[in-house]
Every structure is written in structure tokens, then in C-alpha cells.
Length: 296
Image (cartoon, rainbow, N blue to C red; front, side, top):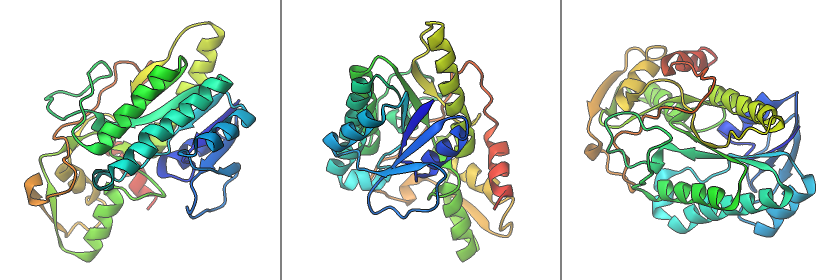
């Protein structure tokens, strides 16, 4: 199967590419000015906001599946520059969706827990109605609408609190700060679902394989899926678990979000739960974290 992955040099995109090899022909798309490493698959430099460019590339390659991981994920950056946020996360997604429609490709769009407002007290499922409270969430939510309005063959994969190799994330930030100080203040009133990129990529591969099998049986499997490691925690609890394995002497102080004013409002509670995964092999988040840290 020929599969194209946007954002292929990103933390999740690179894991998705590796997971799909060697059983598929994988082609990666990456952004200008991004530092390149060695990749065991074809890479194409193109900006997803270039509508004609991305359309030409996708149509010429004619992939069966396009996995769209490329995004502007700096939450505060989005708040400070909403034009860029909507250009990349909404218009860029529209460009990819229109190209998928032209070449009849299945599109898998990576979305976020930040499409929700955080007012819930129980985990959000795929049936809950999005209501984002910051520009990042709004731009990703509008991206979801572009996908569903343009295409018939689509998956939306919402994930959250991603950590892994090759990208800035909460785990790497906590470890870096712990090397610099014996005391860390971490918010205790933001709750979510930590997600290991390796586990998310494995689940995406299963969706691709299952879709190919179901399509041959004329069974529709498209829709929204929540793909995170099992369970939820606060940022404070997450930090404590991280530092069990590194820098045990660091004192972690729980604080409220108001002590760290940021340009973008964060939803209070965005733990995700899936009602739709047929084969849910996602590990508990604590297990996934240990797997990640054991390699560091």
C-alpha cells in the first residue's frame, strides 16, 4: 500500500512512518527550513499551505492513504498569531483534504483533545460535541470540519499530551528543568491523557490495515476515534511519575494554573476515552511512560 505522511519529520509523523515500514511504500512530506536527518523512505519538501503544490504532489503520487500529522501545535503561538494557526491547521488541512478527494485517497487527520472546553467531569468520548476555548483548539476543530465536509473516506484521530523521541513535549521539558533546579512548580488543576507516540502510531497502523480489510468487505469504518494511552492524570501527577525514574531529589510543588499566566487558556479537563476502537491495545499511560523513559 502506498501511504503518504505529512509532517513526517515531526514527533508523531516520524513514528507513524517507521511503524508503517517495511510492509508499505511510505512517502513523507516535510516543511521548509526543518532540519533533516536520514530517513529510510522517500521525502518530499512541500508546504501544506501551498494549495496547488500539495495538490500536485498528492495527485501525482496517488497514495491510497494520506496520514495528515502536520500542524502548528504551539498553543501559545497560535493564540498570539491566529492567522498562522488557521492558515496551517485549517486551510492546510483543507488543502490536503481536497487533494485526497481528487485522487480518491483515504485521509487520516490527527486532531487534539483541545477541541473540548474542559468543563466535563468524566472522560470525553467521540460522541461529545467539541467546544474549543483557545485558537489552537478552534483551528484544529475547523480542520475537522473541513475533512468531514469534503471527504467521504476519512478518519479523525484525536490524541493528547503526546510525548516521544524527536520533539519538544512535557516529559522532555520536565527532565530538562529538573537538571537545572532542585524545585519545580507544576500545575495541579489541568487533567489529560498522556500519550506515547509509539503507541499512537501502532494504533494508526492497525486502523490503516483494518480499513483495507473492511473496505474489501464493503464495511464502513470511517469516523472519529480517540487514541490515547489509558487513564488520565493532572500535570502535577504526570511530573511526579516522570521524576520517579530521574532526579528523585527534585521537589515538585503543586500550584494552580493562575500562577502561570499564559497567552492561551488551557481547558481544565480533557481526559479522552474511546468507544470506537475495535481492538484497544493501548497501554496504561504509566506503563507507556516507563517504556519511553527506559530508552533515555
